Length: 288
Image (cartoon, rainbow, N blue to C red; front, side):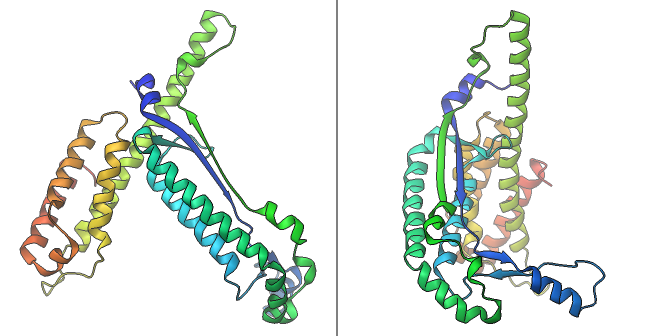
């Protein structure tokens, strides 16, 4: 059974919302033209224009947003289906510092896009040719509202948080429903942790398998870096104190102690040893 009071003291809920204007527009006339040219019997597809083709300013905003989302999902665990994520209190200072830095980068990129908006629209007229339609571009005054970087932190609630005046039997049912829902969310979070570690271990095993000629496959330094990063995160993600997950993390850390990607490439014995140990862990903890 999940100890929700313990969870509420070791984790909190974070909800991150990023909004970015895509700068794309459905062109119905061109879509119909393509259907007609290709003799389709019904609408077979849609043609979306890139309103800022050739411009890097909006693309940079989207790039930063994508990087932040990827980082956010790496540092947190799933919690419900409304965008809430579970964050370890232990890494809250590090998380907040990075989040605030990312917010500044995002705002700077958006401001850069807004400053060059009129110029970018003029450039788009040249880039898009006959596809250009000035009505596709919102008024500059309303553009800023299409971008947002919002986040909130909240404590993990417990079944004792109900503050309603109802009969004891009704309160008992509410608590039971809450505890059932919490168990389901916690199981999903732990499942995510197991899937993360399996993904990096399976990838490592596959890339460390020599080819038919006994030569190593090509792999990047991230093969080892990603595994070590997952080990670090698992220290914070093991909210239920899962002994197996703890032992798996220690086993992987021990396997990779003193190992780097270059050593795996150059030393056949090290490569084979690491692969064998990784495979043993996969088999021991039934990760396949």
